[in-house]
Image 1: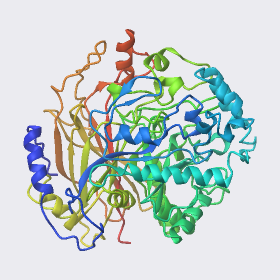
Image 2: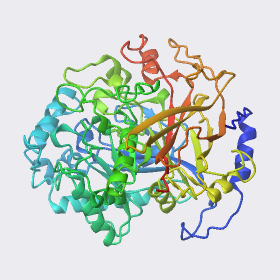
Image 3: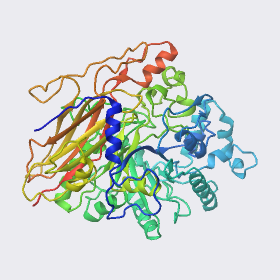
Image 4: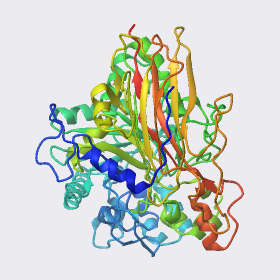
Length: 620
């Protein structure tokens, strides 16, 4: 295996990167149509955004005194200074490139209208306790559970209030959402994508999806909601109808970690084994899954991956509502879904879990909140201030310490436009981060004969291989899989610790396996005999919530050749990039409050990135 580690100054690297990105090649497939922005690059640029953002248009945000709508979310994401619903100013150090506001389709925009005494909605019997709750969190939560009790039946089916969910109200809200989304779209500078969240949660098992449209043309009169059906199969059928009507859309599943085994189950909603038609429908409509967000990561769990020393990252243990703890089951997690998908593909002919990945927020304040040093909470009255998050532990509520910052959705796209961003997500040329702006790229193939960073390496990657999210072509010569891997630290964050390749495969008997390879790392460390790597170190000063970038590397890259390749075994490969330890948001909050960080969660965090997998299919 040939491996290199190049450590040089960030400014030198960026100059090389710019030169590479300015290389002009033809676009024979003409994937990006229409006028091109000044930053158009057929070799693609990295863009950072958010595909899961709530505002006061979501019922569970408005009920906690969030009066801010999509306008505030778009302003904040593009870099404007805005006021948090808890009353203080917030501003991103670096603007995002794109945002989709994905408010819940259930009662979309309705609760915010209740606060207007001139609006007929304010006279609805359900409105009185919501209006009266004001800024009192106990009253707000009582009003929330009252609304839920009047909407969701004991068997999990829904019975929405007919006045609050009338077609007229739904059409009006969705039309206004499209208008706002268009108003903030600036091609080449900031992309807005219209979307919403379908919030199915039968028997308290999370099956939520965010549905995102390529543009605002040919969109439906109003969204499909949990009130229409709790079954994802019905959502996909509805999406197929929209596609026939001219819309282009995709769904992103999220929080498999909270699904009690239902998100990546090997049976459908009626308990039947998955078949080819089901698998094809799922992948046609749902190419992506959200691997991390404020309510934890869904990559894996220590109980599922005992040999993965980094499996315990940002684990959520409490249910979103109700007593008890989250059920830790195999079919909660993306890595297990990848392995089961390979098995199912052999059995039924289509892989129903061939997902790309993005990161999400699920923040309900209209504020993105992806920065550890500037976290502003998931819900306003419950976690909008350091005092709320660390010192107000409410009986029956999940601990705020287990909540993280927002993750980021990242894509390689030709330009910053709706069409290019959406198409990158649709083809799964995407990666996720836990909140920092790690840039990562990978190509899979057989005969690259070059290294990341060398002249024309990206063009060679596309010509001789496939990017993240792709399928390596048939291996006629049975050569081992090669991965060209490159990663760059983000601004305002820690240096890089290491790059890992996570491989999963099925053997000839149909048994699944996984292995994690440390493939390139910072410093002069050497691999142990078992393939593990000594820790990078830790410069965090916990009382001061500071750290030093005196360890780690700004950039890491390598050409990795699979040492265990077997041409008869179908496999997937995805990249995991880890930063050095830095202070977690809870440590920054503890400093503000003048207290020690909570003892029941790590005071530091190793931010990370995950790429969409590259798949290898046997020639058999």
